[in-house]
Length: 67
Image (cartoon, rainbow, N blue to C red; front, side, top):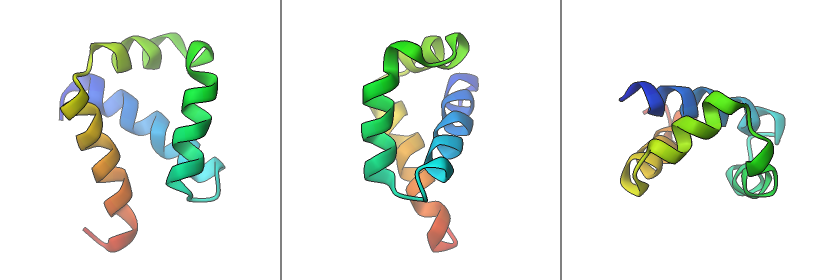
């Protein structure tokens, strides 16, 4: 994972836990709060390509499956 992916992943997991381990709620929360994300997370997210972002989300989704 790139440094930007790691930053986004850490933030994504924090929000995921805050949203009671519900990825749909997490994605909706991120969409609703995108302009207010911490500066470093916002910048990292914007530098990631769609496949890189999807890889982060995929990895976060697999956390509960022991993978």
